[in-house]
Structure formats: C-alpha cells, structure tokens
Amino acid sequence: VRGDIAVTSEKSDSGLKRLVTSGMGVLSIRVPSDFVLARDVCSYGYFMLAPNQWDVQRQVLRRVLSVREGTVNSKPVAVEIGQRGTTLRVTLSREVSGEEREVVRAQIARMLRLDESAERIAAFHARDPRFTKSGRGRIFRSPTLFEDVVKTVTSCNVQWPGTITMNRRLCEVLGSSIKVDGVKLYAFPTAAQMAKARATTLRSRCRVGYRDERLVELARLFTLPVRKGGIDQAWLQDAATPDEQLFKALVKLPGIGPYAAANIMQLLGRYGRLPLDTEAARHGREVLGVKGTTASVMRQVREHFAPFGEDAFRSYWFEMWCVYEAKRGPAWEWVK
DNA sequence: GGTAGACCTGGACGC
DNA sequence: GCGTCCAGGTCTACC
Image (cartoon, rainbow, N blue to C red; front, side, top):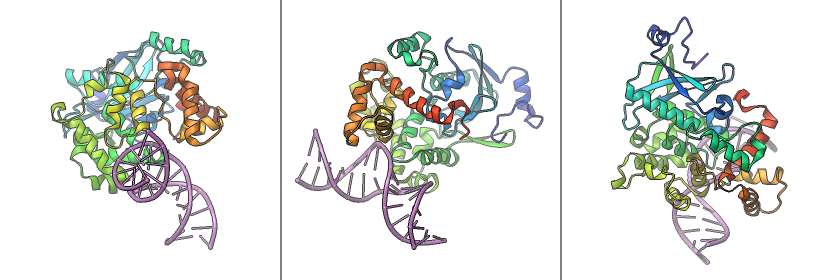
C-alpha cells in the first residue's frame, strides 16, 4: 500500500522491523472506556486532510508527527494507530527518546480528544440523547493548535477539494519528510518552517492564493515569544479563559474571521458557539426547513441549537455529519 | 455598525 | 482548448 508504514512487509526496513518485533517501536495508550477509534477519528473532515491518512481496510490512522515543534529541522516520526479494546497500539517508524515518546503520546491524545472523559461525553448525551446509542461525542482534531488554525484558514472561502489540495501541498512543499519502507512521507509543516517560507512559495506551489501572507504571518506569530507579541497558546488553551475573550483574541489574527474563530473554538473544546458558514445555511434550509435570507437562516440555525448550551456545536455537527453518512455510508468506510 | 467589492482557485459550463 | 461564471469567508473602504 502506497504510503503505508508497513512493518509486516518483507520489503520493510530491517531496522524498523527489529524495532517493532522487539517492542521498542510500539507505544500503548489507554483510552476512555467509551472510545472507538474508527468512529472518533472519522468524526470531522480533518481526518481526510494531509498528513492524516485513514486506512479503510485496516481501520487504522497513519500520519507523520513532528516531535520537535520549535525547530526548523524537526526530525519527524511516522505513527500507525490501531485499537484493541481500551488500548491504542501505536507503531512508530523509528526509535524515539523518552522525551519524544511523551510528545507523541500528547499529540495523539490531542488528536483523539482523549482528555474528554466518558463522563463528559455522557453529559453531552444527557443533553442530546440522539447520540447516546452511537456514542458520538469526540470530534477529531490535529496534534497541534497551529495545525488546527492553518487547516481552518485553508477551509475558508474555498470548496473542500481545494482544502484537500492546499493541505497536501503544504506538507509536500514545506513539511519535513522521512522515508519509510522506501516511501516518502511528509509531516505537516511546523510554525517555524512556515514562518521561514516565502509567501510567493505558498501561493505558487501550495496554491493557497490570497491566504499566502496571512499564513506566513500566522506562523510567525506562533513562533514569537508572547512578550514580543506572539500568540499565547497556553492562554488560548486554558479552560479558565472566558469564551468571549478567546473569540475576540482569535478574530484579531490574520485570516481569522467570525467563522474561523468559532471553528477554532470548537477545536479547543469550546462547543457553545457555532461556526456558521454556507454549509450551515444549506443545512438550515434543507434539513431544518428554515426559510429566508442567508443571514436570517443562519440566525435561525443558531437559535435552533441554542438550547444545547455549551454543547451546541456537537449537536449541530453530529446532526450534519449523520446527514452526510446517510448519503455516503459510515465515514470510516469512505474512500476519498 | 452595516454593507459592497476585491481577494484567489478550481470546477462547471458553453462555445 | 479557451473564456466566462460561480462558490467560498475575510478584509478593507466607505457610508
């Protein structure tokens, strides 16, 4: 399989094989009792964006992780994540240090929202029982806030195939690469790598269009110390930061408007605000039967989900996701 | 505070 | 194959 982090293939790198058979290249992560890898990975469109790769046949997630985010010459590691009961089995493409192992663990936990306890998900189901049976609650995201922000910017003012192309090219043009089993795999560019890139490169080679300078500036803000005007990631990710202050800070960032800010908020675990885009308006008209101008439909969609309070986005999102799956089948069986 | 138009890309469509 | 139109959210200028 192209791009496979194959550890069982006869052709695979002997060093990698030794690592895996000796157990040194495998990491185990305990997950909450209600966690289901296929359902919880394939719960948001980002699972289809590079460098994520969902293997439909084997029901595992593969991607490359940058374990040294702060550096330009980050040495990436490829991971393949599968599930057995309440344990994730993570196969690594190379030996990692103890420190790197913890970074890998934290990045996977972030992607899969393992910080959301079964109790927290049950509270969502108590609020919206429609999703109790399916167990939906966790929404897939990226291993870093920076990647989530860039993915959000590349999903604005463009149709989905364009977002897919931009993310693939950003990885191939700016990201670090490694060879696994003779196949070149790319990591998502780190903030340091993107901040160093020329805007013209992003435009001409990554096809990001007018987003070029905004993305480079965003990346620069992620690399700057907070005292020099850089983004305060700890503050943004602190549960104590009030929603309104968070929203105001996000819309000040280049390329981030009201929709993108609300989307980043849900990616940060703040589900009380809806990122209203044309898809929301379409859902309002076609599924909820709402009528009127786009602005009026969006307002009515917001009011419709307001009773779900701090879980409004989850109710909205899973309702919409179920419509997609009713048309195409379960997301974990989607082939592109 | 609200609104109009520019910003880019890629896909659909007509010729 | 070429030109035109359209969709998509953000940003700026203007009222």
